[in-house]
Length: 158
Image 1 (cartoon, rainbow, N blue to C red):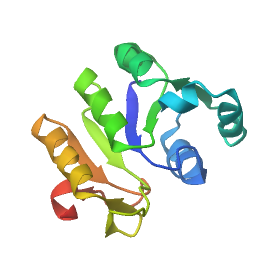
Image 2: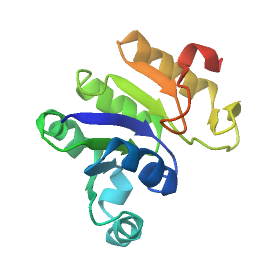
Image 3: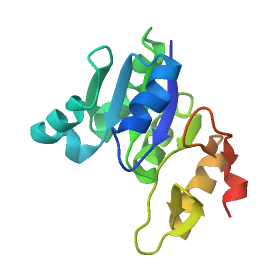
Image 4: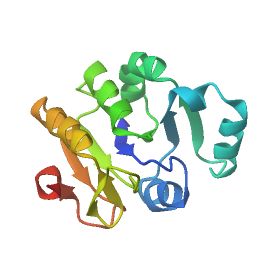
């Protein structure tokens, strides 16, 4: 089965990803794409503690992930591709838009310069512009905190 979800969530691995998305979708593999985490053994160990043993967790840099997207898409594992920021997901979409077609915005939290778009989603104008560019390149971008919630289309976010 291909990559089922391409999710941006600045908390990366946490209960909402594991319990909220992983269990209902029967995820077998989570691919966490982050240049810093891919080089940090102690951060990887922390994230592994949050993932049940029946779900494999892989760490990749942006470059490694860009090269591996077709392989992951063709694999039989039910996978979730996870990034902590929009720029990383945009780089992956640019690398292979046939794999990264649908982008799910999960928790992107407040920090200076961001405006609240939904209770769990804060974006700068530049981030919103980047997401609009992704849609202009053929991606579908929606915000959805949990699979049981209604997907909110990008055009509704401002």
